[in-house]
Length: 361
Image (cartoon, rainbow, N blue to C red):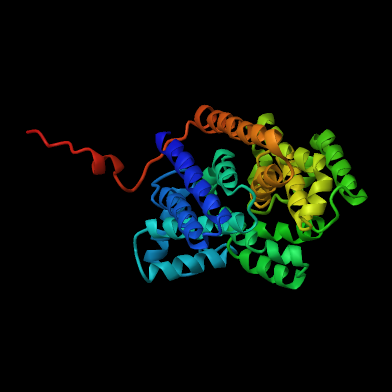
């Protein structure tokens, strides 16, 4: 886990330097520090040799090297096309891992930096909340989520046609992206309006009557790529994860007047964070709902740091800032160390760079 802690600490410091440079109007220096943040995340993610379904995608890449065709696309033609393009340059399966890591981390950090509050808290939250680790597990879906994250401007501007076209194209990478089409209309609603309270009410009823409703849900998706979740009996995410995802919503509600005044576009981020919380709550019963939260959780990383920076003042801001770091460190340790016992293996032998072990005969 040492390399995880090093990544968490180094990206926090680099992001803090970027914010300090940006506050002093040193734009080029700020870009330099943010570029280093992206580099750290890309190298960590792109040079991994394991974690989640990495091995499966490397195996698929090898199969496409031997037989470059769309026969194994299964509807995800965009992702297969990306593989086929990369095959023209390299037969090494690590290529797809590195390129997807580059695109995913670059898109995510770009949007986080564009709508930044405290950028160092955004990056810290991105890693400590476990999302960065998930990008190495659900490689293809997180690529789709990152590309859709870039499209948040279309939601803010109300450019539905552009957004719809983007979703349809991105769905060729992962078909679950189609789920974000109806989300567009919810995201544009006025926060804490009657319609939003109605959605919250429906969600609460859904949680209360989950056992009844789930049978109908899984019958609908039984012939899709997610059909196997109907037989998944290992439960879902922890209640602690649900509570952690509730925090941005609680702050957004308490500071709703300040958000409305200082950040007119905040409705999109508040509503996305609310929907994320709902899906994570359902995810306590079955992991399938957490898969959909991958498209929504990214908005948490902008919303909460923005509130801390712009809606709090003085001692209260400093206290919440420090509490944020401590609490997310605890969550990171509980989820990544105790819960998952995460281990990192790289295609590079990092130790050999620093330690030389002579061969003894």
